[in-house]
Figure 1 (cartoon, rainbow, N blue to C red):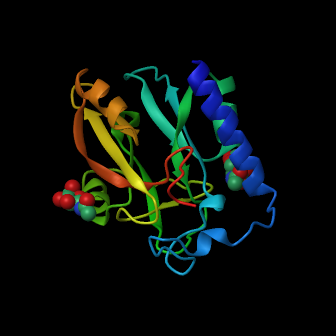
Figure 2: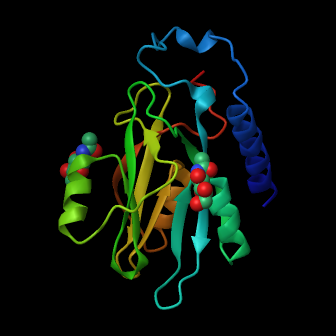
Length: 195
Ligand SMILES: *[C@@H]1O[C@H](CO)[C@@H](O)[C@H](O)[C@H]1NC(C)=O
Ligand SMILES: *[C@@H]1O[C@H](CO)[C@@H](O)[C@H](O)[C@H]1NC(C)=O
């Protein structure tokens, strides 16, 4: 718990820094790995992607992810359980990023993907794309200091779970969740490789 609070505190700092539009230095523009402002998003623009447990009346709880603090705070007041900052995402389409799309299915199922094949399959299977404000963007491949955002699913309960932590993935794998694939590539919380 202490750990989560620490992460949340850090993330709020990140959010405030980003929203205040503080001019930042251009140190990120090039580094030894050859990343540059021309090919990567600016990591100082990345915002927390909050993960909450959303109770449902007729189906099992769902995990819900949002970069919108207003939506998340309203949800918490309405009974959501804020769990963690799952990762960092962009809310404008920065260099080399692609839309990270939320799809809503029957039974209140939520999936998130940057993979166009998965997106098309979901649309064919009755999922719809809700209006999400703000839209989020991630990398389509592992570039610019990004890490895999793993998609896990419990087939019995139709609960989807996403994590950038391989340790967390293993815990879920041991508790009924299968790893479906990689939803997209995100910046890790507290990332040090992407500056
Ligand atoms: C995208 O999704 C499809 C279908 O799930 C999968 O076969 C493919 O490997 C995925 N592509 C990437 C780049 O992960
Ligand atoms: C967040 O959600 C609120 C409420 O739906 C909306 O008014 C606002 O435009 C959204 N976007 C941001 C960036 O806060």
